[in-house]
Every structure is written in C-alpha cells, then in structure tokens.
Image (cartoon, rainbow, N blue to C red; front, side):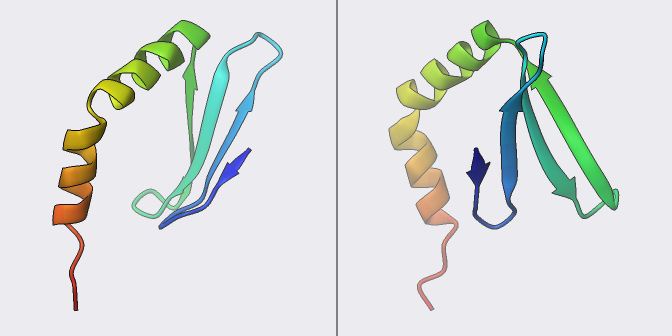
Length: 66
C-alpha cells in the first residue's frame, strides 16, 4: 500500500508478520523504517479512531485559508 500526501509513505509487512512503514526523511537524507506488530497497529488504530475529532481539529487549525 502506498499513501500519498505531503510525503509518501509505503506500508508493507515482513515475512515475520510485522508491519513496516517506510518514508524518506528529508532531515536525514535517507529512508527510515518503522516496524510494528499487528497488536501495536491495532492500538494505534483505536487511538486514532478515539481521537479523530481532536486530530481533525488540530489538522484543520494548521491549514491556511489563503
């Protein structure tokens, strides 16, 4: 899966069953990888769903209406 946005993020899973997120880090000048377990992903998913209103508000407050 490839997520597009300000910076693209690629999501895949390893042979060991961990989820891996890959994104190019401008500051470091290289790709960075984050490996998480399915349980960790589910906890993040729940956190995002539970905090969706606050996250959306914070995101929209950061957008200029120029």
